[in-house]
Image (cartoon, rainbow, N blue to C red):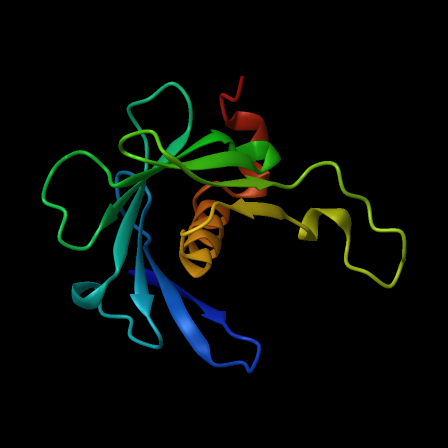
Length: 149
C-alpha cells in the first residue's frame, strides 16, 4: 500500500510527488519526478533513522548502492528545526519554524511558516522537497514521543 502527495509549482503543475510505503518496518518515501509515481524512476529514497537515539532522516540518491546516505537531516523534528548535510558533513541548508508570529489575522497560523536557508549552489527545489519529506516522516502529533534533546 502506498500514499501519494504532490508538490505543485505556482501554476498548479506537479513538480514532483512523494510516494510513501505504508506498511514497512521504518518509514520509506520516494521522491519521483512530475506525476510519475513509479518507484523505479525515483530521484531519491528517504528513510527515517530507526537505529539512532536521535531522530534523523537518511536520503539515498538514485544510483547509490552503499549503506551510507548521500544526505542526512538531523536536528529537532518536533520543533521543525533541522540541518541538511552531505555525508561529508557539508552544510547544504537549514530549516527552522519557530520564532515567527504573523501580525495579520488574514495570514495563516505561525506553524505554516518556515525559514529555509539554502547555501549558494544548492538546488532549492531539492531542499524544499526534503523539508516536505521530513514533515511526512515526523508528523506533528508524534512530537511528544520523539527523543529530541
